[in-house]
Length: 254
Image: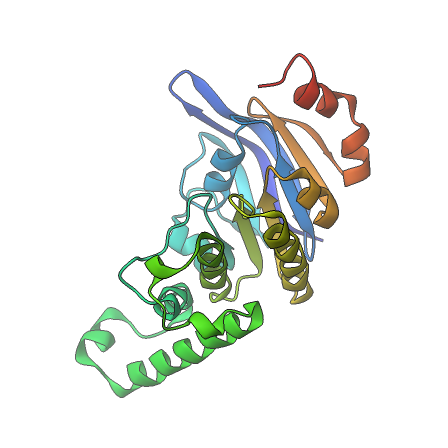
């Protein structure tokens, strides 16, 4: 059953066709990867799916609900969380507070209740804190809850950004280059973690350059080249696809 469906999605920036009529589906419970050379349109595609960009044409639906044209907050509220290629933590907050920010998309108290400091906001804030800590326990990073975000190592900051995305209890998680800057041990740990996340019933869509990671954890892989989809298949078939081999190793390499 398709949880996410992307249909003929296109986006142009001036004279550059960043994404051109891209279609694919992500079934519930799947880990699906999007790969391609630099400039293939991968991050633009993620930004279109997550509401950070509005497509020129095409459609994105999540569990039958229209996502295209919705802002990031509405996409997150629908059950889709994401991380970013460049880490975006709040530097003046603790690691725990950063994760709690991700949880606030599930909060029910409005701005006025918060301003009036009503009892229900105290209870809700306590619940947000507890659930944020539970997420950190799952990731094995609760021991750093009180640390300032800027004091964390690069690998730790990656973990905290992932924790913030998971704190929203998404049905689908979009991971944009999660292995960027990680060493081999950290990447191996990330592969195990993504598999554990799928075990929670969370569907994963990942953009990644590390082919060993992609091939080890993905159920299916979409390949982009110059904004167009050239393949969409299982990992073994992708490895043997002549168009994919040509893009990475032959005349179309970029």
